[in-house]
Image 1 (cartoon, rainbow, N blue to C red):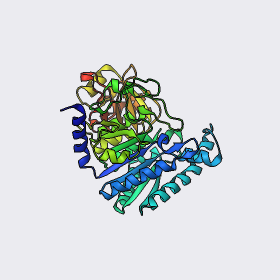
Image 2 (image 1 turned 60 degrees about the horizontal axis):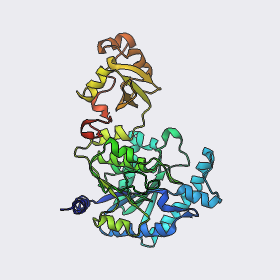
Image 3 (image 1 turned 45 degrees about the horizontal axis):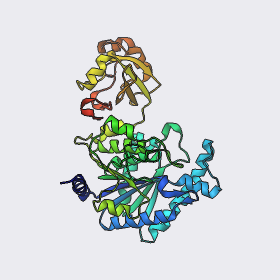
Image 4 (image 1 turned 120 degrees about the vertical axis):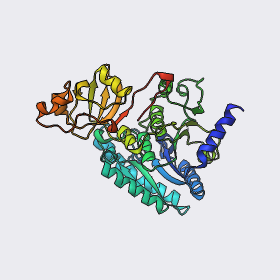
Length: 394
């Protein structure tokens, strides 16, 4: 049996049980030099209607607000100031949703707009509120159209790109597939815009260092991500046990081809072991507020022995954060090891780092816990050399 046939079988098997899909459409697909690409939007809309008729629920992550705003103002490029970019986004967002309203309305399909910031998903209560809203819309047979709220967002609460947003929404909505549509045919072994001999990789079974190196970080004209952010999103989704397909959204009938099991784009296979919802939220939704630097003993205890983080293994604290915030754990070389929720604020950790747990109360006058981070609130995010795998483990 040849590789292509195996790929088709695996795709057909994976897609057979999909009842809810997140479809992320990038700026390179939705826009031209003159603004929104209405022909492409109408084509993708018609294909999404076909999926709805098959009983598949759709959550749409759409870029394009900036492009639409630039067109309205007659600008040829993004303005530099934050306030002007936010104003452009405000102008373009209304145009973007109106285009979708018209395109879906021709098929009798209702849509709803949801604008999010990372802050909305970082706080557990707001995360659950957003999740409940999405589930309600889906139960009403309404397609949610989601974008980052660029009109108010600042660096501290930015997703960074819609690829990160799509990964978070895939987990939040318990979707069984992420489809990321871009303006190239999928994931190549190197950037096809710079190398004519670049080869398309049809299936990625596991994430390793070579895969991450191959991913280009060059964004498009209006995009903020690039292939690197799409691969990282696929990795995050994989750890929920969910596959991702990156494909060319400019290709006519692309969604129909994907759901027919054809060998379109690149399929990123789901991980065999998945993180639970809470740990996935800690690892990928909570924005880290600081950094803890660990000694070799603490690094070994966390990575190899699956232990909690004690104050004795901490040799450095960076940033200011409160109890319950997420922080990155790194070794002395600066390599990322894990993400976790702290039991003490940064000032207290500076006072107790290097101490035994029995000395905490004498130093602070109180003790919340023996551990700075409990194992239940800790997710390993380090890249491991074993078998070349880049794994995330609970």
